[in-house]
Image 1 (tube, rainbow, N blue to C red):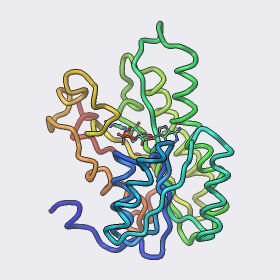
Image 2 (image 1 turned 90 degrees about the horizontal axis):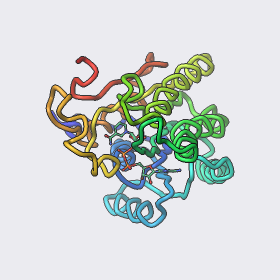
Image 3 (image 1 turned 90 degrees about the vertical axis):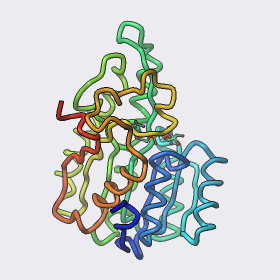
Amino acid sequence: MSAVEGQGHRFVDRVALITGGARGQGLAHAHRLADEGASVYISDVLQDEGELAAESLRGKGLDVHFHFLDVSDPGSWDDMFSVIKTGHGKLDVLVNNAGIINVAPIEKESLEAWTRILNVNLTGAFLGIQTMLPLLREADAAAVVNTSSIFGPSGAAGYAAYASSKAGLLGLTKVAALELASEGIRVNALVPGGVSTELNALEPDGGVVPETPMGRRADVSELAAAVAYLASSDASFVTGTELVVDGGFMTR
Ligand SMILES: NC(=O)c1ccc[n+]([C@@H]2O[C@H](COP(=O)([O-])OP(=O)(O)OC[C@H]3O[C@@H](n4cnc5c(N)ncnc54)[C@H](O)[C@@H]3O)[C@@H](O)[C@H]2O)c1
């Protein structure tokens, strides 16, 4: 059964925000949650692409809107907060999905690139949880999903900044889960393996595919199904954990 065949209506009357939602996995998450009834905000630094993506989903009868958000900028998060507070007064699902990557051995990594990647991938998620907390508290049983990567737990030569940011996200996920559990807010991490998106389109030799037992990259819909599970009441007793969706990469 495909992800789409298995979907239900778990997000009716729910409001979701997906960062980095203009394309790739973020857009697939937006599509999936909206298909299941959510009102979705997709946010990104890619204004034109994001607006077109939201328009296209609205053309399918889905409730999806784009708003500019640079996750590394606290002021940008404040704007996003105001938009959702005015529009809905609560936030049920926050998916901290925005991410960037670079490849350089530690010896050659610039401080500028290191800082930029940490700011977007890790600080962006921290700011997201911190800023949106008052709106998450207004929801009945809010859920946060932070998109890590197999390179977080496994490490990867040449990816010091990226792997460190993704490992950091696993720590942030556990801390946020512990701090917010008593309020009924769940926080989990998605740990994707190789996924076919523009992020890794230029990777030589198929990236991690040769080391992936299933011998392929994931389709974005396979990650969206996992996010929908973590964000839904199906995962009502699941918090502080890591859902690995990697075709077997981490078992090697
Ligand atoms: N593609 C993979 O193989 C893979 C594997 C593991 C984890 N991931 C992670 O999955 C997430 C989604 O990536 P993707 O594969 O869809 O790639 P992608 O490049 O298509 O999507 C990333 C999105 O984040 C946006 N973004 C970048 N900087 C931003 C900022 N400062 N503020 C807001 N948005 C910003 C980009 O514009 C883009 O739309 C990322 O966190 C990535 O690290 C990807």
